Image 1 (cartoon, rainbow, N blue to C red):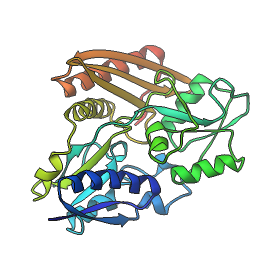
Image 2 (image 1 turned 120 degrees about the horizontal axis):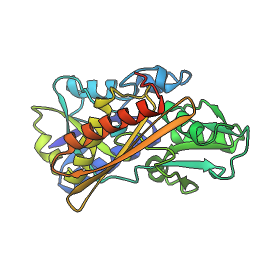
Image 3 (image 1 turned 45 degrees about the vertical axis):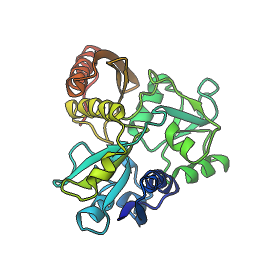
Image 4 (image 1 turned 60 degrees about the vertical axis):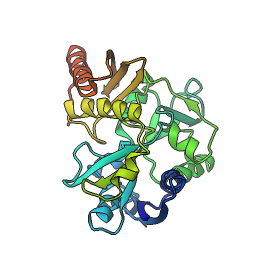
Amino acid sequence: MKIRVAARGSLLSRIQAEKVIHKLNEYGLQTELIEVRTRGDRNQDAPLYTLGKGVFEKEVNLAVLQGIADIAVHSMKDLPTDLVDGLSIAAVLDRDPPFDAIVGKSLLSLDQGDVVGTSSIRRKNMILAYNNQLQIKEIRGNVDTRIRKLKEGDYDALILAEAGLRRIGENGFERIDPKIVTPEANQGIIAIITTENSKVREYVKELNNEDVMIEAIAERAVVNKLKGGCNVPLGVLFKKEDGKLFGIAGYASDFKKVTVDITWKSTEPEEAGSRLGKILVEAMKNEGIVLKT
């Protein structure tokens, strides 16, 4: 059997797809990579948070719905919580480090007026809540393109996902404490999408890491509670350990940030996420921070 794998054509997306392909090949399955260009790839000028949901996933998933591909591979953080009818997440791989990282100057060495590049409203608001003397400048492009722009002197530092940096072999970074910049939901997770009645679904499910899936479900429940997306400055991270879920969530706006945490039973990920979301909303009200949707 040959499994057709759809993914974006960026370096990072190809690396992620190759991880899935390698695992499928280990099961004796043949594979074919199908590269798809998305709206997010075509529009390199507008800030990401202005482009709406699914900017990096719709066309890739459409290839599966149209029968052009059997599975779609994504950075799970790019997937909206409400997938198109007929599609679902069949599996998630082992999770890479879910944290954000700073490249270039270290966090402590940033001076007043230093230019920090990010395309994320979450990272922008949270780093300004930490240090409101910085200048935030929009940056678009693939991870390798952004690193090149940093080296050319356009920025003093960049904030990027640690997982993406590691996947392309970039080690010159500093991890950011999640209490300062709380990661995006599902960051560091590679997800595999299939149609719900796909013939290859059973093969793909063999790749699933159940603990990571539980973490992902809990994080997505927080996003649902706050009606979040790429245009909402919300971060959340859960870790499953010793039968429990340890969660942290943060929200930043107008140079202020609130961070809350929770410990919950790992058998109830949706309830854990919903509860953490409720705690966060209450903390925001106490600090006078308005939820923006």
